[in-house]
Structures are given as C-alpha cells and as structure tokens.
Length: 147
Ligand code: ZNH
Image (cartoon, rainbow, N blue to C red; front, side, top):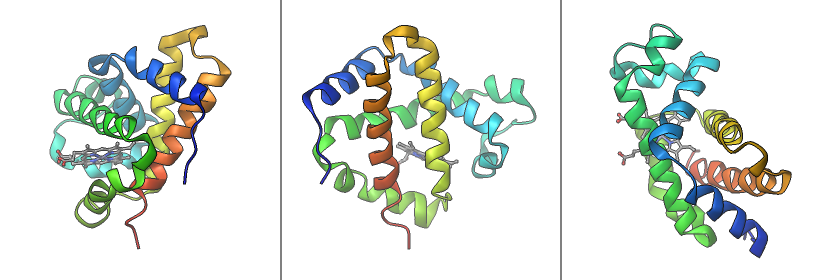
C-alpha cells in the first residue's frame, strides 16, 4: 500500500488547486506528441498532427489533454486507492486502446515539466518529489491490467 505523508498530500492538493486545466491539459499532451512522436500513433482519428504547430493548434488534442487531467483528478480524490480507482481505465488502455504502458511515464513527465514551468519557484523540490510520487502511482495503476 502507498503511504502518503501530510506534506505530500498538502503539496499534491496545492498543485491541483492551482492547475489551469484548459491551459495545462493541451500543453502537456501536445508536448508529449511532439517530443515523443511515436505516441502519435494512438491519435490517428484526431485529425492534423502534421507538425508541432498543427499539434499545438489541434482542438481535439486540446480537448483530450483536458480529459486526461480530469482523469488524474479521480486519482487525487482517491489517493488511498488509486489502484482500484483506475482498474477500468487500465483495462480500457490495455485491451481497447492498446496503448503501450511505457507511454504513461512519458506523458506524466511532460505534465511535470509543464507544471514546473508554470509554477516556477513555487514548484519546490519537495513539491516535485510529491508530485512525481503521485504520478508514479498513477502510472503503475494504469499499467496494472496489462498482461
Ligand atoms: Zn489515456 C482515453 C486518462 C495516458 C491514449 N485516457 C482516456 C480517457 C481518460 C484517459 C480519462 C477517457 C476514457 C473514457 O472515455 O472513458 N490517459 C489517461 C491518463 C493517462 C493517460 C490519466 C496518464 C497519465 N492515454 C495516455 C497515453 C496515451 C493515451 C500516454 C497514448 C500515448 N487515452 C488515449 C487514447 C484515448 C484515451 C487514444 C481514447 C481517446 C478518444 O477519444 O478516442
């Protein structure tokens, strides 16, 4: 079982309370698709991904970035049971979407980078450690149903 300190819980909820979904969601997903172009293969139905500019201006990508953050919010609200909270989502990614689970880590790193850039010095090393721990639990839970 994952144990969270009060400081970690406080840091993670503070980060989420300041999170602008409409800005960070699109930025983190488009960054992932640009710097790790092989992740584009899952978004064939999302229209124009021709180059970085097209990806950054693609409204379907923007919308999906927000969906992903909303998905993370479910983990935030169920910090002590992320594994079960994500059971269904893990099955979806594994059996239906067939997303290689290595990509979860790539996307979560992009999210950390975008948040760090936005928060600046408020994103302290302690915040970073707490947030990356949170994301690693998410990544592991999303990968649970793969076999
Ligand atoms: Zn995912 C979908 C979340 C990652 C791909 N996703 C999805 C959704 C959600 C999510 C919530 C919706 C579902 C329903 O509808 O039910 N993701 C998520 C998270 C994460 C992820 C949280 C991490 C962190 N994904 C991911 C990745 C990828 C993906 C990495 C690739 C690369 N997803 C996806 C897809 C989809 C999804 C493709 C479907 C979309 C549409 O719309 O179609």
